[in-house]
Length: 199
Image 1 (cartoon, helix red, strand yellow):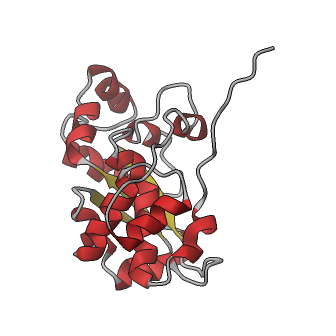
Image 2 (cartoon, helix red, strand yellow):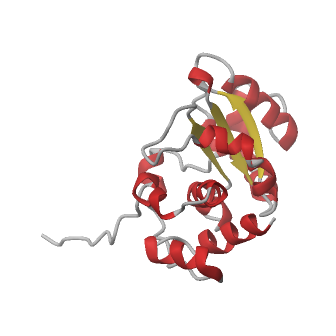
């Protein structure tokens, strides 16, 4: 029976957080890791939960997002974000690139699915996002979130996320070198985090 090589698994955030001593570096590297597939064009959006609690590295990412203006960091790289209060005082961040997301929602099959799910005008990105945000605020989590995240029908988020292997990071500066040495991240990790830190 033939065995398939899956390659090295990408690290999780807790394995890497200790590499970044500065608070802004910590937040920028976290955001770069969590949005890498969006920045690389692999998917149009991602959903991040920022719990309001101390992480194993000793920092509270929810507080860092507020203190260091995470929304401004994201906009430096052409990303938009919807903020929604999460459980226990945390935040849900729906982070996206407008053009590819609008293109996805404009497809006939996608628009038809969302209309069946109760979205009045899925071809209008802002209207569709407003409807999604209102549903994120309700107790029942919207199952159609997978469409906005670009997850293919019939696949779970976990299986979809591994479709494309990340490429090694390349970029300038000591911080970027730390990123590259720490993991097998996509190229955008170091490049974008460096942009955020210079803002």
